[in-house]
Length: 301
Image 1 (cartoon, rainbow, N blue to C red):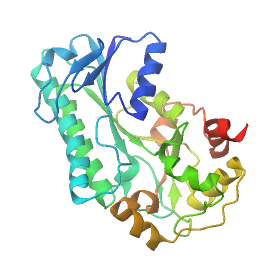
Image 2 (cartoon, one colour; image 1 turned 180 degrees about the horizontal axis):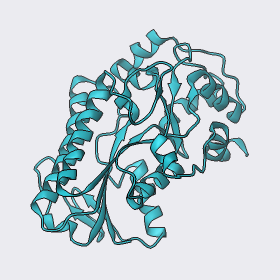
Image 3 (cartoon, helix red, strand yellow; image 1 turned 135 degrees about the vertical axis):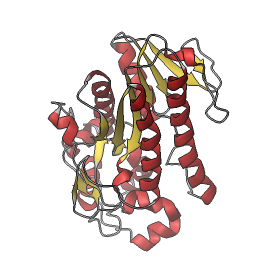
Image 4 (spheres, rainbow, N blue to C red; image 1 turned 90 degrees about the horizontal axis):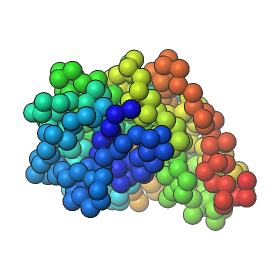
């Protein structure tokens, strides 16, 4: 495969993706502000700087840039930065493609299942309409910027990531200390659906988006077996061999997390319809084996 350029390579998904691509012999260049290593290329989404020649000989651009959602609290300023960091970086990449003589064949741009908003028990696929709320508005703007590249002949894939589970915690990292202490439990009644995905499958799905011409537009990157929060917390406690009998009411979550409570209270029962139609095989399709794999050092599995 020709060269791949990755924006946001220092994050959880970016680090794992770069390592996987290089293990397959792919040449990877990372966009950085400022560049330090030989494989890094200067860019600055705040000032709009990126050399158009960066895409010469590049087959794919993977855009994972954006302020982490895990930074607490979500003040008004933080919410503005969450939106701006995603829109600015994506806009710069697409505008630079338009100015240069060479363009990548594919742009894989991160998004999130927050696009669907809070949807209860409704089964959601890529054809489902957008929901409401802060994350839904962010993802609509984010994907809209990426979609402009299609007018330049670039195949655009917007990977809507679910709750990414990784060694050390990933999306559930903040929960682990409580569960290990036997103080875990369901959140706000536990009926909300959590659509999760193992980091291994996230990396494989991004690679599939790069190499599979039939994948374009929004692509849900979630395991096929979504779990309600009460089931998720029950399995997590069982894997950790700890009790889980201290439920947390919704008002307490909103009091502590403020606007960020949206991430754990929203119900999104998402299916990876496009990945499955393309023949993608999940390494970790079921919750318990996924958690056992990721938490094995702590549990002795």
